[in-house]
Picture 1: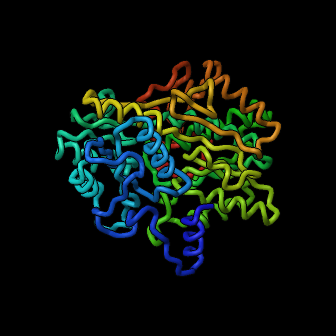
Picture 2: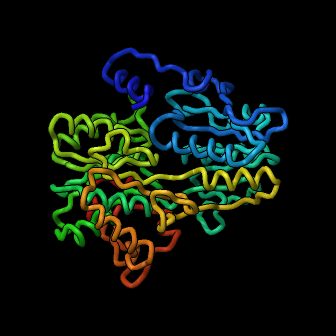
Picture 3: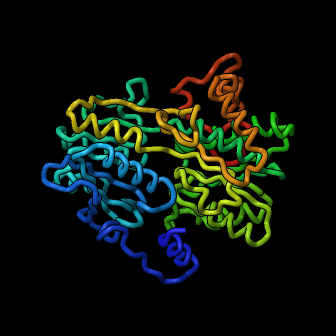
Length: 412
């Protein structure tokens, strides 16, 4: 566990522990002019990349995956240099907008700005409009998607996202394979199209593997989603993810899946297992996530951001980077070490012999013999998500308005 998480857990327990700085002055204040530079490549001739991170760069989840991804891209593209600001969120930096942070990074020479959270969608658009000579990437979002509902014709704005729906399907399968009770808890962030499609995908994977490999009826599967209200804990503003995870582990849910940026599900799962409970967990975001508690980890779906970020930096640095919408799927031939598609899955020790079923499921997903987006599929209110004989379109998947029938938890 990182020092950040030791500190955070102690603070949540009522101890006044100050979190040390991550890199230099980065992330410690409330003004947007505190940045840290990558130790890689220095010099006035470098192509400067600015990154705005919503959370800590070492959060063992979403933000760490982005940070490691852009560090990899900097190493892959000679002559590039990273400047970043992390913890750009209402709790750590009140009254500081992501677009203000981008202004500061651009003033320091950044020619490419990357915003790493859905929360920055309008900041990214604002920065792109204000700085037409700077390339802006929003990791998530759909403003550059010409076939999407929210297309903005902004030439210097691109979106990059992974098709994590398929990673979540594999994760849901792993959860079902690892559950004896059939009670799977999902720790969700805030509620929007993205989070609804991810939780729904996890449910579809769990339901398929529960019925087809565990040979148990769907009625015996209890898949519950609890939303905390943001991508990570903001004391006084969100539900406490530590308590939510504990409530699952203490309430008979023997598998808990994480959908948030931070590793409370893993941390509390380890504590529950150490106390004698037969529980397991599925981490999210970071490919090394199982190292937090290897013996009870069923696996982790992850993003390998270094792949699209390397491509983007190369294009931006060459001056040949038109607006584009990138939605990159899994490399089914090598889920644990993707070399093309950015979505991967690392199986955990807790899968045991059930890994053979997970491999079979992933193979079927890859060759098309298993397609969980074929209808009929119903929403919670009984209306059609996908009608019988049809397959969900990209737009139907992206703009998921409800959770699915069979899931417990609110859709709005």
